Image 1 (cartoon, helix red, strand yellow):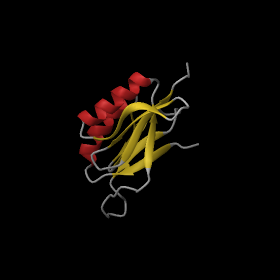
Image 2 (tube, one colour):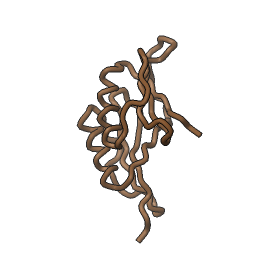
Image 3 (cartoon, rainbow, N blue to C red):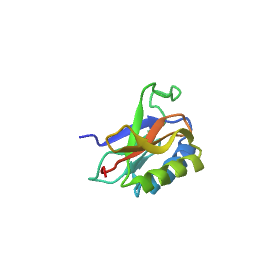
Length: 126
């Protein structure tokens, strides 16, 4: 049902480098690109992520309590996405590891504009 989620940025070029790297670690690239908007994902695939300068001309700001979760294929890809994010201007919000007892494995980070994301996978028990 969700096609893509859009986050605001103060610097589209800097943000695009971050998302090119992070989305590349997830195996996807750019699927749409216009003057002030870029989206990453796969046409016909799962939900993508977009980045834009706000259309109202006001400064981009981070939504308190807002987070975008990026689904990884396994724990190794969660680790790779997390490391890629930090190597490309992201900041740590929680190292990769299990969360809870139901097989949820995730890493948390922020992009260069402060938007919060995570990479996660569901691990089969046992």
